[in-house]
Structure formats: structure tokens, C-alpha cells
Length: 492
Image (cartoon, rainbow, N blue to C red; front, top):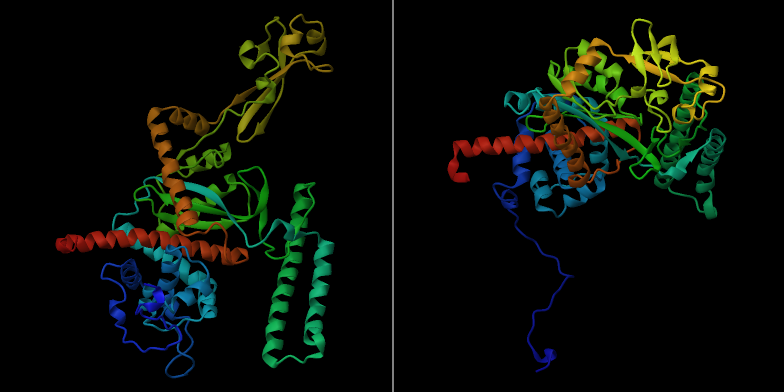
């Protein structure tokens, strides 16, 4: 029998139907979106309400509930959705988003504005949640890690331009509006004209900002006497080219995240333009102290943060510091092509070194370098030039005698090295990787935040806060679920 001879139901996609939708039953009772709504509802959202201008007395367009907007963004991020347009689209068909909005739509412009304009209120909410989690025993500050990760900026490497080119682009942007308005002799509508003007104005603003950033970097170049050529991105002027794991460089921001070791809760997050990490340690701990009202008892960070200066300052703040610091001996002592410092004998009485051939290396002076005293000792040129051991001791020295250095550590550095040499300290330091790197992986893989969706230092800082708030809310929700199960074990 042929298919044409059979009675089959036809699919009519042109028809329109009306349905009765029970919004409350769009998602099951234990759906994550319900738990998220409950968790956000337990927080004090007063700062968000205070920014709403529409009132019953003054009138105006009704605003969306802050609880709804916060829930939309945090639920969206938890599902790897970081675009305002996509969240707005999901409100039209995704049951979880429909349940949140009660089948009402939310404009993507409203969503986008809420994400970037509520930085102060969001920061307060982040701190408030940390307080609630601390009261629940999820944050103790006994062991805290500091670690950074590079997140791509909304800019390409090709967008970086010299000052002259940026000025040319700015002049071209100023003339672009007139050319668009008169294109093909067709007079644009008022709405089209305003849209085009808005786009060009945003472009001009970014170019002006790029020129301002250029001036800042030029001033910094004069202070540091750097030689590299200065270029700034015309699409995200505050982004900086940073080294990548593959050895190349790309426009990035450096996200600094502090994580508590008790339950892996993020206790601080900050975006910087610096490619290095060692200058970020102390500011990060100051922010943690400000948020939590107290400093961590023990802090762990990798070699990128470990410098003698940081060790000294951590000791002065009475914070136990776990890090990885190499010997950093002078090249004069560690060159593989000549005798090492262990081949020389130090004579403390005469304050000199004696080489394997019996010649003295006399004291030449000292300097303070990287938080330690460095003492230099040098042999006479004639003693080395005719020495039978020259080929093994200092084959490359032609005009000078062999030199070695002796370093003297401060009390804080000595205590740090003694502590890090113990097995107990090494065991605790090994906790650093699993504590610090998990939030990075979760934010990039689970949330998909490998590249920021917004431009500019303030806005990317706000987006990082949204991501970290989402991360902490997931842990808070797990705590609330356990509390619910403790009250009603049958729900398990």
C-alpha cells in the first residue's frame, strides 16, 4: 500500500490556536528557577528599589521588579546565556523564563541597561549575600586563595591603532552621519535619523575615549621610560593586550578572584588592566577585609603573586602567607657555564670569598634589591686572566674578574622560607589549585564567559560581579535545599 492511500494527520503550521496556560505549572516544584527566585527573594533589594523613579504620585512607566530582573540575569548566566537579546527571546518560549515573567515579555534594552547601570547596587547585593553565607557557615576566611584569569575583551587585536590613525577615524566618524542622511537621495525618517545618529555618536565616543587612553599611556610611558610603541583599541579603549597561554597576545582583562576554602565561595572579584598578578595581591585582601569586616587568617597564591615585598607586607598585617618563591639568586652565581657559588668559600672574618684557586674575591658594596640585601664580591682581573681554572670558572670574562653575590634575607623572608619548607605548609598550599581554579573553570565553561559581552572597565567589572553572584547563588541555593530537606525529609 502506498503512503498516499493511507489516512494520516496533516501538520498545519499556518493555524492559530488559543490555549489556557497554568503559569504556576510551567516548571516543576523543585526546578532550579524556583529555588533561584526564592534565594533572591530572601535578600534585601532596597537599594534597587531606590533607583526607580516612577511612583504612584508622580506617575511614569511602571518598572520591572528588581527581583525579576536579578533572577532573569542570574538564571540566564547559570544556563550560559549572557546576551540580553537571547534572554528577551527566551521569555517568549522557554518555560523557566516564562514562569519568571508570568508570560510577560521583557525588552532587551531594559535588560541590557539593568545589567550595566546597577554596579553599585549589585556590589552591595554581592556583599549582602556573602554575609548571609557567612552566617550559615559557608564562609570562614580561615583559608583564602587569590588567583587571576584572563577574559577576552570585546575587541580584536586588529582594532589597536596609533594616535594618528585614531584621529583620522574620529574625523571620518563625524562626517559619516551627513553621508548616511543623504544616501541615494532618499530622505530618512526621523526614527532612522536618530538611530543612525546614535550609532555614530557611540562610535565617536569610543574613539574619543581611545584618544584619552592614549594620553594616559603616553604619560605612563614617560614615567617608566618604556620603549614599546603605544596602540589603543578603537572598539574597547580600556582593553589591554596580554600574554596568552600559547605564547601570543590578545585584548583581555585580568579578572582577580578571591575564593574562601571552606565551601569554595567567591569573596571578592575585581577586573584590572594589568597583565601581571603580583601587584594585585594586597589590593585584593583590602577589598576582602572591607567586604567581610575582617582579614583572612591564611592566604595562598601562586608564584605570580609571590614577591619579597608581598611577603614582607603580609607579615606586617599578621596574615599567614603561602606562596611559591624561587631562590632568585644572581646570574653571577647560577650560570651553568661556570663554577657555582658552592665552589667558593666565604670568610666571614675578612668578609671575602675565596675561589677554588685560593684567590680572594673582595667586598665591593651592597644594594637593596627586591626586599633583600645583596652583597657583591669581585676578584681582580689579573688574578683571573692567568688562572689555570679560568676556563671552568669564568670563561667569558675578558675585562673583569669573577664576581659572586651573597644575599641576606629579612626576618619575615626567613620565617616564610622556613614555613614553606615544612610538609604541613606544602599540604595546605596544594589546596590552592583546587580552591582557586574551580571558580575560573565554572565561570568560563558553565557560564560561557570566556569573552565579556560589554565594553569598558566599569561595565566588564559589573559583568564579572554578575557571574560571581550567580556562582555564589548556586551554592546558597544548595544550602537552602539542604535546610528544606532537614525540615521535610520526605522531599528527598
